[in-house]
Amino acid sequence: MQDAVVNKIKSKIAHSKFGEVFFVSSFPQYDVEYVTKLLAIFEREGIISRIAKGVYVKARKTRFGILYPSAFELVTEIAKRDKAVIIPTGATAANRLRFSTQVPMNTSFLTTGSSRKLTLGNRTVTLKHGAPRNFAFRGKLMQELVQALRSIGENNINQEVETRIGQLFTETPEADTIEHDLLLAPVWMRQIIKKGLKQ
Image 1 (tube, rainbow, N blue to C red):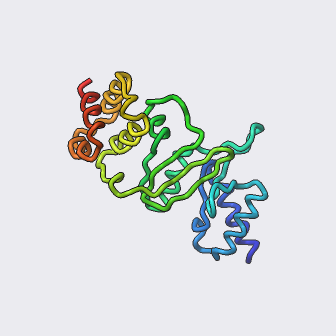
Image 2: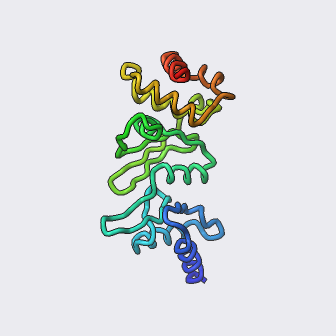
Image 3: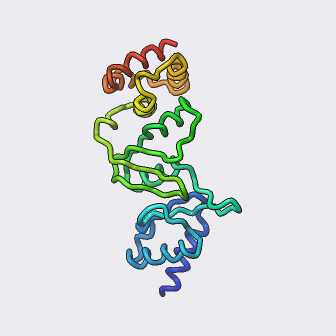
């Protein structure tokens, strides 16, 4: 019986795509403790990589080391499982919205789920439980933009940043939600976003 379980779980992992995230709860039909042990064994065998307690990913092995999916793909999978919302913060948000070309080594996200740290080789991904006001925005772009501007800082806003804000809203118009969302942004950001919208 146990061999059958091992083969079934192994087969599910083998047939999954690279970047697939596995939790102990991904196999609800089997005993939790047993699955926990099996996943730890599969990690030792190099079939999956552990990125946090009880969280594993099917990573691609190359001659340069282990190739992990992007932090955004991983946290999206975790958020799906936790039925949570995530928002990139800090330099992660600034990079995603292309205010900065610098890819941060350590990425950070706010989540409505539980806080946790993921380890992807020498990189870390931090999920921090955020205050409800961060998730009160109706538009997806606006909530990320507020985080990006906070990271850039009021004193570092220049013409380039304002132009990029204009481009972002052209690419992802949020006409229906912008009025509501502007009121949730800090006062200094409102002025900058309004300027950007006029460009």
